[in-house]
Length: 606
Figure (spheres, rainbow, N blue to C red):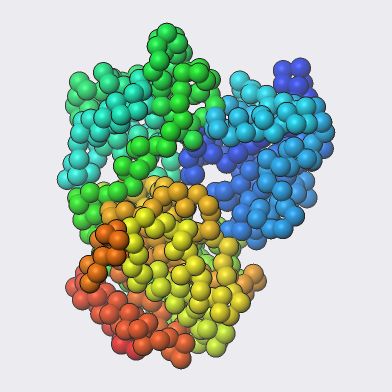
């Protein structure tokens, strides 16, 4: 049921028109001050004002209407969650403007458009300001977010302590990483680097936190120069263990002090030719504090460095996926047995039981995202989240899609499996097999260095296209090392941004094509892959070639495969994959007869 938003919008509009603000519209993005995809409860402003819970969306509230922009992953979910006060703008469909175009074309000329400068990037603010000038409108930064003022029960900011990430898992000390950053600063002839992305800070200093659910990060900023490294984080979060870990090489200061410090840096820089480096995800508030003339925008060196995992991180990724696979095998065997015995379980019951199986594994910390446990039509909601009292009972006669992951001290997992615990229809099998063929095509591809995920994406869709089918989400994303489950800059998809980052050995990427029919079912098969050097008989152009190593080890649903559609090479792929799973995961579930029997059946050669 949609959350009633009429009173919330009325209170916000009253404040917008007051002498304190005098704005005609207000922009409400999903992100926090660090441009995080997943955010703490206190930062869920767009969710609170609109009632839409998806992770991607942009809300615009004007004096006359409220519009919510989101992408194809969330069309169905948003249509069910928004009440009558909202207009759903389905981004990417013909005739639907972007939120930037909407502001320029749909609002009256001369409008004052309010924005929280901590929540919009400096790059977006510049582009938007230039566009607004064409209609004599103005972007107005506000010092206090008006949503915070009308959100009476807004949660407090989290205060959990920070923990260290040992070098046996990180593979490199924070001092060595700081040295690499300083070499980059010298190459750019800059004064220093401002770091605002939470996962970049956690990676750089080999620290982890729990301020954001499912993401082991903590609220902080950092500035690194040739002579010092400053970590801005609340003192209550820092333990003696963390202080000892950081040593004398890192100065600790309170979180909000960065804005005053940047102003002081700006005064120093005004008299010199050197600048502070920011990136395209840095907030307008950071740029304003430092002074626009004192910063230079560059591609994030830390994001690129973090994306290429070292051997310790890769070992952790392989190890944690074996334990994670054991948990999933226990779960799917248990679930099938319960359903065939007539036990009534809803989608949340399933998700909760899977979490318990994961919690039994060594070095388990928590979930890497909310489990998508979905039966039948709910599987078509791509980022569905079941809620007790509103979810469905798992139906043995319908497709079951489970997308889940865990955070372990040595790595992060993200795996989707689609099963049918009874008899699927011929059409369901055909759709599933087309998805499987796309999955295999990505897994098995060999490609020259310099290739991007934008160029590989058609491999995942080709089999679906043969039947006139497709899916409205990316094919793959990077995955952190005990960090965010969604990590850039690499990815596989149709977004032009994915053409900016060629694959490199050591990167991680998911392989997750799907197919979804609203009101009926959803299908997705997802593994995590590691980019590795490929051994080819030739090396045309001396470019070098790359391939993928899969680390996810969970069986593919055999009864959903239409064998007539698979080529001999595809059947060989399935059999070799299942043989590997049985060999590696069988010993880990040996104490569970049901899991052993299920695993052997589901890895039977085809």
